[in-house]
Image 1: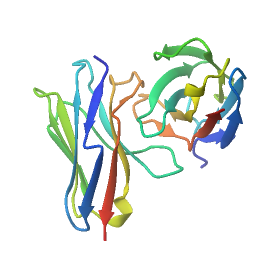
Image 2: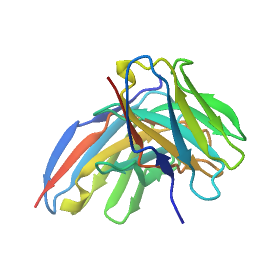
Image 3: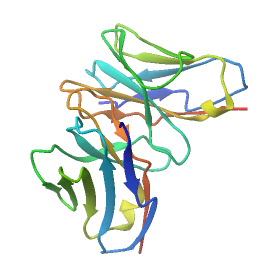
Image 4: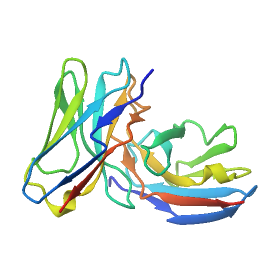
Length: 112
Length: 112
């Protein structure tokens, strides 16, 4: 059983560009959450998707948006990239009662 | 009120010793407290979790102690091994809500 997978592994962009990160949840998991982990910090919750809708959102600007597809996979989009957006972006999936979250290996985004 | 404060930032323990990491939270609505272990290049993995109806939970060499009145919880790793060297994160959430609030992390090094 494959765990949570994310693509790409690494990504380099320049300021002002847009980026799309992808996540496939663990088999059978219907809820996906995205986290941003800056270097040396704990992950910070960006938002959560369930039934193709954003259900919860953390303290992130609307430059951060997402999507969930009918097969439960998800995308994270970040527009107008800033240097401060450089981080490891983690995707986590879960099943009811949604407490144990399984994290993917992350996508390392570098903004130059 | 969403913060979770974790200490120490880094910890060095001799093989066979006890590693202790502490966390404190502010939001009294939190009722689920997991600990995650993260190795370099990997996403966080759930290690052990506790709910406030018990003061202690033990799984193998890992024990969570929970003090509801002080709003503190800690992770004890008994008989620490070099393979335990990793970054550990405490987290808190409301049961079923999925949004995890993470501490800043503790880099644990076990010297052989």
